[in-house]
Image (tube, rainbow, N blue to C red; front, side):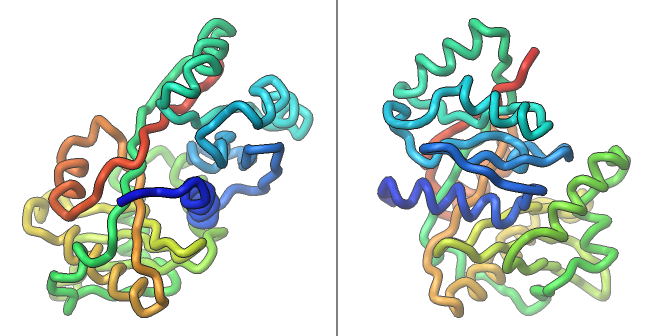
Amino acid sequence: MTLLPADIESIERATLAAVAPERVEALPGWLLPMDHGTVGRAHAAVPLVHDPLHIAGWREVTERYRAAGYRPVFRLPELDAWADMRAELAAAGWLRVQPTQVQVAPLAGLLDADTSTCTLDQRPDAAWMAMFLGEGLDPVDGASRSAALARAQDSRYASLRVDGDTRACGMACFAQGWLSVHGMRTAATHRGQGLATRVLAAMAQEALARGINRVFLQVDTSNAPAVSLYRRLGFVEAWTYAYWRRA
């Protein structure tokens, strides 16, 4: 699946529609989401293009964050074109953490699964939230994630239930001509049964009904089971990014 430069921008804008920050500012070539919470994508400056030659420099970005009262963080592509900026950040004491793949796919590969026990709701119910937040989650992180969900635009909350028991869930957001997938979870006792595939199929059917025919998601590169699942479903890596934070 070939991406055009406009697709990169639309993916990043769609990401912030789903993982909604408190505020968003902009500089040439950048989106500057600003948030005091713990959700990385909601408070990390992200480029809208993968050619850094004609965008604002990283020092200008950090100054804008500090002037607004937020701690600067970057989310930078792991591409050769960005090697100089990454080297500058490293020399200035910034640390690279959490490499993450952006994966894309056409919807066609997601439609062939049973969705009879899946629902897409406008608001998450208690069972959805409990599965999304997980057992033992830090309450500050939980509050931050819940607040970001409440700000999300045009999203649906997918639940797969059997006999009233929620066994898998995820969030679908429809923005910028994309279905974006977030918060995929499956109960530990029901993993390996194809439930995530069925949740994705329900999201894909809704997206298709809205005239959307492509999907993206973001997955930690260390999450081998998820990376393998998405590959089997036809997702391919578009690019990898990592966060850059002050030491």
